[in-house]
Length: 256
Image (cartoon, rainbow, N blue to C red):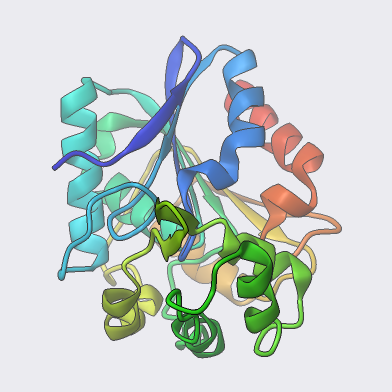
């Protein structure tokens, strides 16, 4: 089963992996800009997310293998790979496993360390959605607001809603499996994993995902890593400051 994607433009392949509970479409705005700069952008949905296949199995090893099969299918090599959050963990593991396929690696607001589970409230909120009762996106948003006060987070989650059939909403994510396997999201990169190619780590200035002490671990795994802060942005730096995110990526691609 090949991962679903949206492919934009022509030129050097540029693969983008979204974060937990997201989808490739989350990067559509920047994807369009990268395509205008001469890249063929692949906005990929990872397993159990978006329009890609659902599976009872879920791990970074499997997601890296999914990406390898995707690359084989589309004959991608020597490509730029960008991953955000969970997608960044997948991208890191893919790069250390298949370094010959990756020309440049970009990791957005995630490090190679282990992270404690912290998605419980969001998963509880999504589990509360009863689509036998909920008939509109507004009703879904109202219920989510009882658990999640941040409007931006709710809008992000609501992108997972779709019409399964006329007058019946559903979620594209495989919620039961993601709840069962949520601890997989925080797993670290293997201790002895190394990548010697060019890497850009982008961290949100208002995000706590990459701290000062984490930079030591990053340089241990990625000896040529450059770490850059995107000011005025939290964890969703591509949505909160897309201009600076774009500029930093393009500078990295053309200078490094």
